[in-house]
Amino acid sequence: MKPQTSPQPRPLNTLRHALPFWLSFALVPVALIEAAFGGWTLLLLPLVTWYLFTLVDALTGLNLENADPATGDDELLWYRRITLYWPPVQIALLFGLIAYASGAAHLSGWEKVGLFFGMGVISGTVGINYAHELLHQRNRTERFLADVLLASVLYSHFRSEHLLVHHRYVGTPRDPVTARYNEGFHRFYPRVLWQCWRSAFNAEAAMQARKGNPWYARENPFWRYWALQAGMLCTAGLLGGWIGIGLFLLQAGVAIWQLELVNYIEHYGLTREHLGDGRYEHVKPQHSWNAAQKASNWLLINLQRHSDHHTRPDRRFPLLQIQDESVAPQLPAGYPLMTMAAMIPPLWRRLMNPRVRAWRKRHYPNILDWSDYNRGATPQPK
Image 1 (cartoon, rainbow, N blue to C red):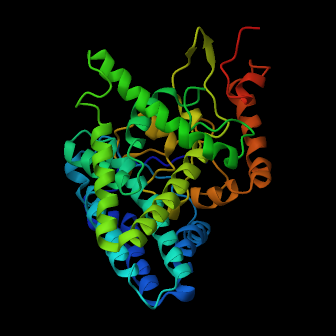
Image 2: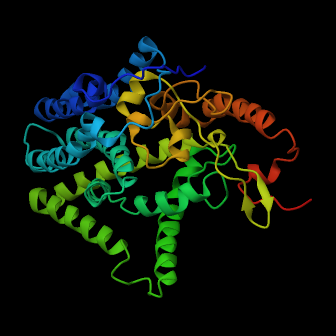
Image 3: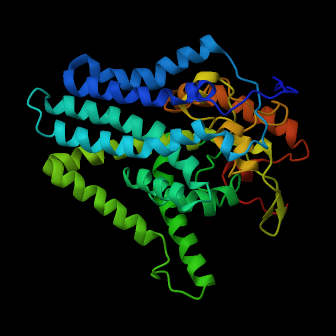
């Protein structure tokens, strides 16, 4: 797989070129149909996001084209609007469904659970992913919108953990969300739920300490995180009572599970070489799993071009570059299908462990003993 480079990169400043990435907005009417009719329609959101996009991936193939990375923000208007418009749409959908479903007599208890399972699929697959794009930008408006989306799933600390921990320590034992070789998702998930919150809190406390402040200083963003999350819970309660709070918590749990499934597959088994004294080599394209499937990249706004994201974290999603598979390792399928495989550890190991071993031989033929890396521990001098 070799990326295509064109002497005349395609234009990016029209709605027509950005339109495939707007497909996520089509999930909103699907959610409304589920709320109105219940029954078998409650299968639609999981079927569309997981299976339909996987099917379209198989039909449309790979996108190996790269846009000009020097393209300015003024030419990306229709791409930027996707992530700017989504937060109010998601918040309106979430709380509108809570107000509607909590008192909907035509929906049974289990149908309400199914509806908000689907809402969680939207919040996790689209909402947190768009928050990820927004939190990497430099202006306050976009970062605030990221905080709103993350608060709507009670995972606000993801911003601190991602910026201060993950991007710095990816591929090392200090990064909780780098899945260890042979670590199944069902072991990975409870581990990261605690370790990510703790590492995010400690990173922000350390930043305050460097400024001469205690952890509880006003500048600590955890105060903002807690206030926004409390506001979301109170709104759910006001609109739907205890049922509304329960439905809100359900969609948040599903969204977090979706996020951590993606985190699991993005760096599974990929480690940076330990140079001694707690130092590691710089992050390189070889330290992230990528996928070039068209449809899932439309849904996930090019998140699957993950190696380039780690090279330039603030690069906007339409400008992320696909790289040759000899440099940036490629998954056998797009993220939606791979996350489903990750839920079945024997299948996941069968698919991925041979690829990790081949990756090791290609990039680190000098490392003969991988036992410490496999345990997620810092290798000690032999």
